[in-house]
Image (cartoon, rainbow, N blue to C red):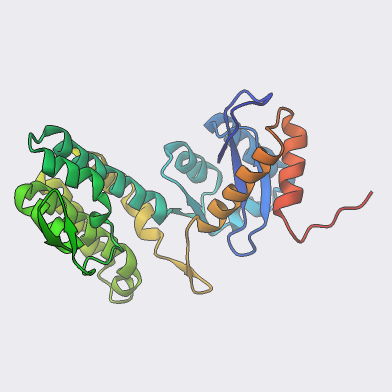
Length: 278
């Protein structure tokens, strides 16, 4: 999907369909509303239906990757009955990190200690999954001593125990997300998922209620996402890269208003192997 702030479309969002293997943008639709998408795929089914076999090309779609949008899942289940629906892992982890940041900011707002508030806001990156915490210590004026990033993180953990619990839960899921193929190969993917899901529910951190609900409601789609095609895990990374190109295209064009022309330009610009003839 992509956001169009100014256009002649009824919806502010269009919907991009892409081939995961080739990277080809198949079509650009003027809205992501469920009834429109169902009608769109129903018309395709009607055009290519084999009435003897009672099948169409839509039945040949094996996997569909999507963000965590209920309408997309409903459409996939209705229009692609033989396809396996996969939840994009990036969108799952984004929900998790956003919820963790809400916990951090809650403590920053509620603490009466200005030093801790400063550390929670200024050094928010010490909670990132990829941050190297063992850097060379530097003098911190607020603390009055030399510290490295691990020292700052551990100081905040000591002051805010719930923050440490939330951080450890976040890291456990991110490690699971990276190691899912191993768990799948060993036959323990669902078991480990359920253990992790229950931990989010058991600790009762308010900001994690949203993520816990996500793990419950999208369980099967998240487990499906650990499927690999040609050595690549199914995800939306390819289409997200197309979205970045599309954003630049919109900026350079100073916006689009006519959707038909917009669609043609998007398909032409994003499908690099297409050829144009007069």
